[in-house]
Image (tube, rainbow, N blue to C red):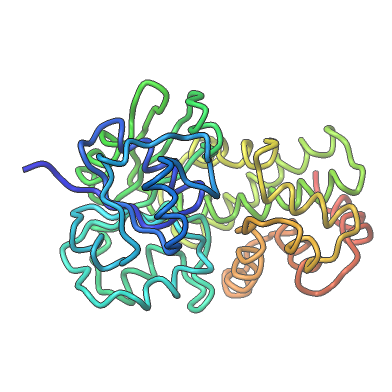
Length: 329
């Protein structure tokens, strides 16, 4: 019997993942909250709000706006909703998640618990760690839509699960690597969004490419220290899953976190920058979580601290970043 996959989420990343899966599967289950988007998709064959250039053959999609229906349908579930809404979506779950293999394509922290998504599933739903995995970049949804060559890292403690997911996502424009560092890749995916905001703020303040490269070079070392404190294991921080993901988020025009930071650097208030952007900048929530987690870990994280001060303590970006430049090398 062939395995069934279900995708949870209606945003750009969820849409990109469904597109990748349809390259390899006869049918893909897809849950999204919005009835409007679902109906539009059935009629017009594309998501009205995100990556609307991607056309779907809806005869190969099992669409539903009932999350329980898709959970019951699938063996493998891929969650791709913004981390801030994970809690809300999971409140609707009445069916059992037991025996399901859960992969998170969410880059961030569940604000209610301050946990990365994998840990949240483990603690709240008793799912064993070997049935929890992570899908990370360097990969922008917009580029998947354009079928530009993209790379994914699929991490899971159970290598077989990682391989199955990788085999179902890969195609001529998607290359996949598997890893057993679930915790490290998931934290890296969250932290890189904070560093992208930092890169954006610097750009908005008028710092140039020279400073940007120093910032990124410091960011990868800061990330290494942070992740090592969370979970010590042998990992090469220069691998694509960590460094590659950081670079694309920090430099790309498609990066919403960088865009958000850029607005802050240019003088927008946090509120007004959020209003202006219709998409969630994950790094905003991540900055608070990472700062709080690090209060216990005690890693040296000047960049995270600077972003936190600007976003949550109302500190002036210009002065804060001037001080940050003294701390970088």
